[in-house]
Amino acid sequence: MIDTKTGCIHIYAGDGKGKTTAAMGLALRFAGSGRRVLVAQFLKDGTSSELKALAQLPGVTILSGKAVPGFARQFTAQDRAIVRAEHDQRLAQINHLLSDEPWHLLVLDEIIGALNQGLVDKTKLLTLLDQRPTGLEIALTGRNPDPDLALRADYFSEVQKIKHPYDRGLAAREGVEQ
Image (cartoon, rainbow, N blue to C red; front, side, top):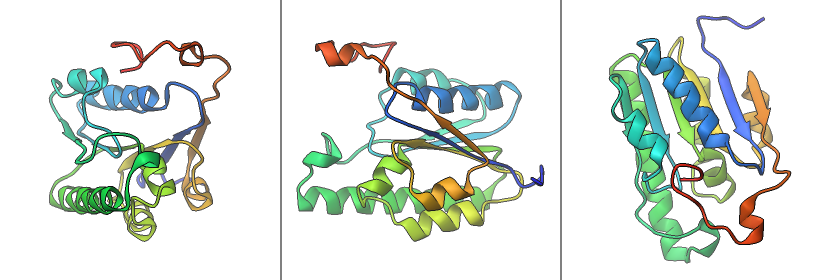
């Protein structure tokens, strides 16, 4: 039985479009109910339209930005070291914020991808999940979640791509994919 005072862990995974949007929808719901939300992005530059809208809401704090442009699969060894250090620093900042004041929802956007690429310390992430403050909900997004993450999830939603305009060469469009 789930202890409702503990808070649940949500995973939005899969190869389809909408994982981040689902997590940001959850953030919108929390913010709309007067609760405090912390959104932290990994492997992203913080320019998505969802963040622009969420940043205007009271009680929402966003940690984002990316020191190295491009996709993780294209990173050099030096790029990987820079991004890993940035992500370790972001996790430390999250831990500091969580210990400093009460939060209701933590969104770790694309943390699963960062973990799969070796750009996040797995032990630090699992410790954050296991030692989260009482009542804190945590949402994680990305493809192919590690089994240790899946075991901790209370909600696990799979977003499957059936068809996507990108397959026909249509680039990401503002308001739809970005």
